[in-house]
Length: 271
Ligand SMILES: *Cc1c(COP(=O)(O)O)cnc(C)c1O
Image: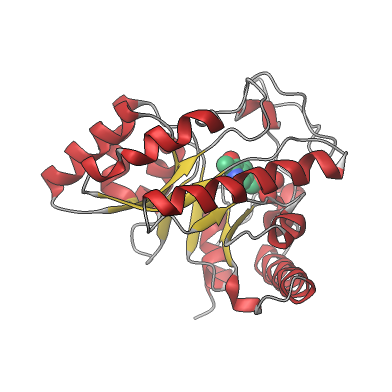
């Protein structure tokens, strides 16, 4: 039986995702994969060098069912509450949930139950609490240490100067399996400024890996800048809008204080 026929699209769904989201997502996914392959080729890297993490935030759970039908099974979510709600609705599907946004310590207990990886580790307090809660469940968690490479106050993550002292103590948290570093580049039309963020993270990784051997990967690059991130060495790119279309929420909803990007100007529904 066709999955598509089981799902009723509301007028809002159709306005945002079109009449046939499954076909649209599949085509967008293919286009993004092709762009990843081209960027890899340009950088002398094999195309399977880069992992695509689809970012599903704001896409409703019933629409994500259609995305899953196209073969997308890794879902990146910025906010834990939203991930929890969706996970509850989609618990019949084999989905890997990645939490990619800033986490408050009091939410750790929910994260450890649902996430397969966490991209925004940025404090000892969080590391401590994650380790404690994971230990209680007798499980490990893949983590990326988030670094603020843009110098913008609105962005979360460790200051670059604080990274090495942080890395030096990661082995105190045996339930955390550090995989690499994560960053959000500056939102700027000036490509060189964006590239500088990615280069900075790469340089930091090259140092961090000498202190903690498993910190090899770079999680960097979004819809607007993933090709540049790949050129600068990204191993994981986190891509939402290029697959699922523009979001109704502004970037400032995720990173308070920033100027909304030009690709994402719609104001959040205040109803
Ligand atoms: C939303 C988000 C992304 C993806 O952004 P797009 O513009 O949708 O590609 C990447 N990383 C993080 C941390 C995000 O919150």
